[in-house]
Image 1 (tube, each protein chain N blue to C red):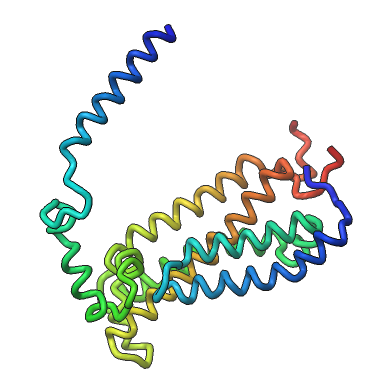
Image 2: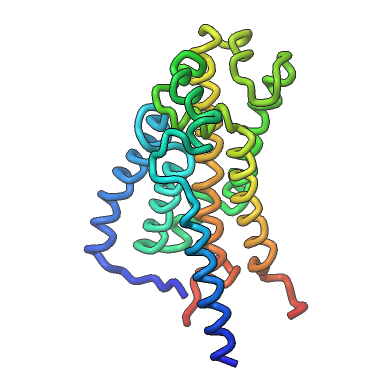
Length: 94
Length: 151
């Protein structure tokens, strides 16, 4: 059984490494990631958002919905922790 | 899990460190516009300072300052602040989270007001993250009892 698992892991790993060979080079200006919206973010950040830090302007302004979702995820983590773990003293059921 | 250990050295160092850590956390939140930082990172540092206080002193010591009801309220209030700023933009006649429209109620031009809107949501994120850190740590370390145990 362990041998079978090892074979599956090696097979999947080699597939992943093989597929990573198709990835564009680091910092390639012609890769899809840097031709679509990135130039607009880099060139117009100050003009459009008055925020000198492009990371902040993408995080909180251009992609505001994304950050709202992230905050809700953290909120959900706390709510689930309270629901699962919190025990009150007058709770005699267990 | 958490026991009261009266250690003068730890308490003395924490008494000096905690205000500095909290001050640095506020700096990271407020200065996230210009340097690496922002709501998530600053909120995490702020929550860590509460946890340090809880470890060095006592659970009761922190619970007196941040009662459970207040802390749980703050968990929800940060998300509410974020969503409310978005809804305010919607009410004023722009898209959800389009901060430019806030110049109708804030004394600044539409471009500058976008930076203010960003700061507003960063503060909301910071409040939520710091309250969540404290809440999760308290629940996990005391098995949900929120009091010190003898184990």
